[in-house]
Length: 166
Image 1 (spheres, rainbow, N blue to C red):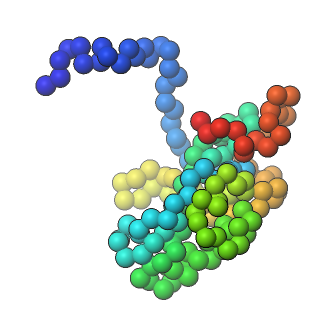
Image 2 (tube, rainbow, N blue to C red):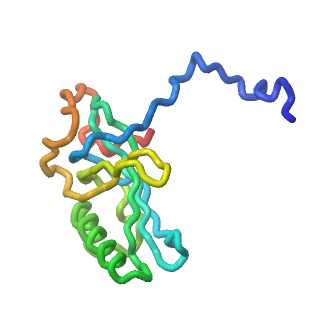
């Protein structure tokens, strides 16, 4: 059992920290994003490989600026159909970030692109969530995205995806 003073060493004051907010799915649409993490991992079944991707949405001043979105693409899978789908997704992703013959997952890092999101309804006891439905080159039309971003402040970096991750 913890002692009464087990938080004393942390010096935490909840009034000094913004509380976490709900991560309800973002509306379906196209969002500018940047690849923050890319790693080849074993498939969850243990019999294949997947490319695990983490994207950061950048909508300067927009409601979803800084939100993270995740995707997993099958590279090898015991199911030929799953592997074919994964390789088609990987091809779209590679074209979107301009890395046509990757040799290392690190080649994808900090590359801007547009991701098209859809909402997967609640299933198996899990809440609804976003899923990446497509990958497009940065500069592709993002008119479908929600809500439109306001004009960037004068001090904004020339390339918004180059800012430091939050």
